[in-house]
Length: 205
View 1 (spheres, one colour):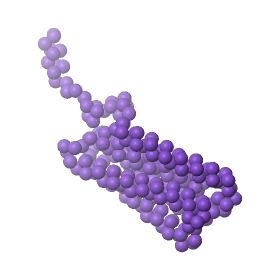
View 2 (cartoon, rainbow, N blue to C red):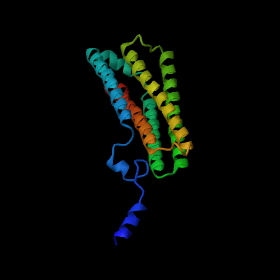
View 3 (cartoon, rainbow, N blue to C red):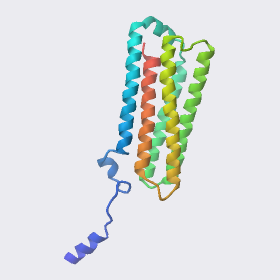
View 4 (spheres, one colour):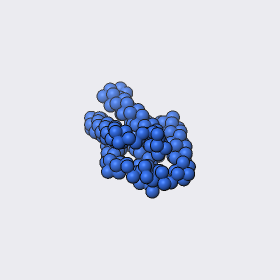
């Protein structure tokens, strides 16, 4: 009986974070360094938001008047675009955990395409505002260009991260669920930041 137990136990391979299906449920997904970076970025943006709110409280009429010229329909469109993009990336994480790497690559491509579409829409919105004479000479638009501009840089970095994930998934020796999770964490942060920016700049009155 002891021999049978010994033989049975030798056939069981130790689970690793990338092969154990319960890992995602019992551990924080992704890399710890990525979480530190994300929290740092959120703190920096929180500083931008606090300064914006202070200036808004000092000049409520000026900010409200300038805010009327924002195209809220474009803001809503970009919000839907990024939320859908995050959904694709989240599905890519699940596909990677399930060993469906080809499907994960397709989902990441879809998420990246929507991220690029977000940048195009935002670029058009910037062009329209500048053409209409709304430059950083106005206090509200000074904040608008800085906050959305820094966010656009984060979107661009996120697209580079998604490209790195695709490269990793194409290489069988480098496929790691933790890597895809870390990339998804960053992309979801970009999405969360935009939702906050949309609420602050477009919706709040």
